[in-house]
Image (cartoon, rainbow, N blue to C red; front, side):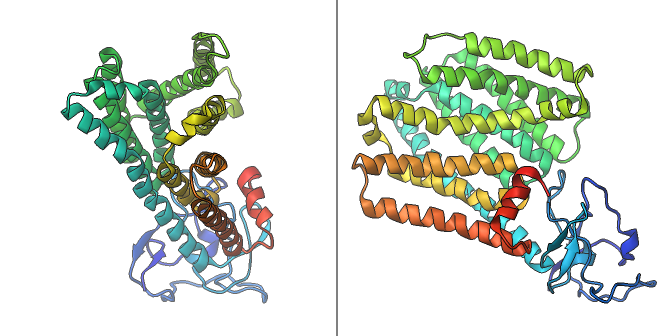
Length: 412
């Protein structure tokens, strides 16, 4: 049986290297039996426990590597353990390892619906370009595509820093597919050429820098400069996009984006000059991920506002596209819950329920889709969410799913 074990001989538990921030060792996967001979004496255990029942954290929030149970915690029986904060938790290490693997596969599988979601637009644009029908591409808003592209780049940097491979692949695919659409719009002269050149430089730089940082080939100062850039960009774009959603109900102005840009520059400069507290610096470092998440979360709000003003536009929505958006984001929810990533969980849940299912609800309300289609999608979504929450509760040994949600929001 192939299991994850620590590199080298099994050390006594008292010498297991842990830190308060990341209580797990980096592991390798090799073909070895679980019960290997143990060099040296093992420490004594209380009568109520066994060598397989050891400390294991329930938070699973290591920042720079995926959760893998330490070798000493690979026992297959249940029991009580102490997490890294001293709380008693119940859990089955083997089930934790299996659910870790499954949630990672679910997140990786999200690539398929996201690819299918963008592919029809790419094919349609290609056909119009080949037919010389450039005017058809004017209906595709390049600013909206650019906003999504910036969001994908920001989230790519966030997940690259966390070493979440499946999420990295999802965001990389999003960057590439969005850039293909942007290129098509530029060829059709639907996007100003100088903006396209600048976008190309940002995309190429972002992909290369994230690749180098993932393999630890990048100077820390260069990476920090990139993080500052996407932080300022995200903070500037988000309020401008939110403001533009309500035009013509509000004046057409770039004031929100301009004010946000100045504030973003001041905030980042203060953090780099040591004018902020440690918590303030940490907050600034998380801004780019949250602004990217909020950009994606704003998409269904903008869609609903447009549908509210023009109900006939609902007929132009594709039920299959909304279903794919619901499935793609829904597949990432169990992983976000398992690693206790509140930002990722919030964005994925919002997009799956409000953008995907919410759009289907609007289409059903206005008789654009059948009741069978809507209720089938509804049952599938909420059953999936219930299973994900129940399974996470079970593998952590909690008595209530609210414990998992509490850990997600507030930590253990």
